[in-house]
Length: 40
Length: 255
Image (cartoon, rainbow over all chains, first blue to last red; front, side, top):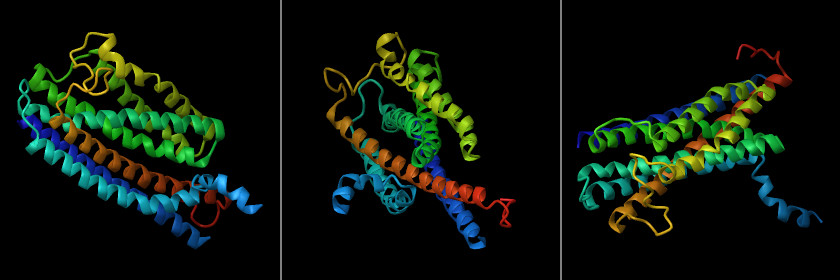
């Protein structure tokens, strides 16, 4: 049972963490582009 | 004449990075939200409503994570191979960005497949890992993803000649996919044989199969949402780098 709970915890946390990273990374790329076009 | 020209080529508009950017922007949140709901529905059904397995007891419920993660790891690699082939043939910017976006998502699902498999193997087989054909070929897939993650640095700096190594690696890695699929038939493995995609039909009870397919659809939607989010970021990165090449001394050269 502990292995079952551990796998679900790892999976859900990994998906959450990856989603958070993907969103923040995407936003940072967009911001870099916007800052750059403002200067140009 | 203009309407005749537009109609058959309408789909090509979506291949333009700028157009794809707006599609990704609107579809990524929808796919992620619907994917989370479907996935939660599938795993709640699988955890609390699906019957207990006669041989494995409650431990088999790792299946609802392990199998979809494995399918996604294989499917995403096939997509990455296709995008790499398109990048080599047509040198389309979207194929570069899709290849880059697929690598981290595929790595995540390949890693989750190996981790959940290991956590399933310990109570059922009495070992975390064996070097049998299925586990080894899956590990090779994970290493191919890691290689793709490493080589994508070249594409990020737009050294395209060096980056072609990434595309060739991804294409060669496609050979590993049928090996993973048929490893349980070609060799004697500790891993069980295929129980869903078989000539004789699925070997899984319907009560277990339905939540499995639901959680797989949910994870597929989440993975597609992740890919769209990353493609969007990669397009912005590409636009930024193109602008830097055009105007390298506009005061932001330290970026």
